[in-house]
Image 1: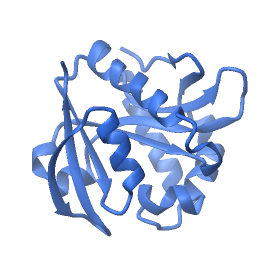
Image 2 (image 1 turned 90 degrees about the vertical axis):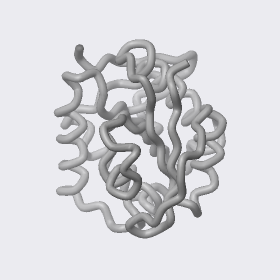
Image 3 (image 1 turned 30 degrees about the horizontal axis):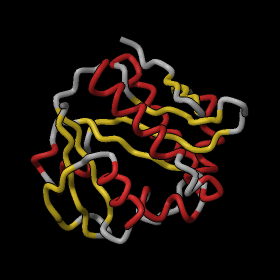
Length: 176
């Protein structure tokens, strides 16, 4: 199975390619975005390239990274991803081997429902198409917006553990 484009009433989620590197690097370099996604570390073009390359490598399995756009526009709003747990599983072993959704949107596009809409499409893909039995999720404790989003999507609290920079709250969502 290849990673498909996904669609919602307002959005198109297109699988990320190496052609998206510059726009993703610009997004991930924004202080509001990198604060929690990259533990507030500067995002070099080499790091962005490694993340995109890793996401593209997973595309043949049906997951990876999607660039999110309004159906009526070509400019990216942000990105969502469905990736194997890495850092999360290092700190909470119960998450090992699971897929984890992520979202990053430019601050100008916050509070418009885009992240929830895109993540809902991603979760449907994970459960309905990829037949995942469960998904993992993690948020840095200070990231209250992420915690609210995870709860709205139905994720259930698993644990709180020390992360690389912040304490992490871990969650799971079972296929219903």
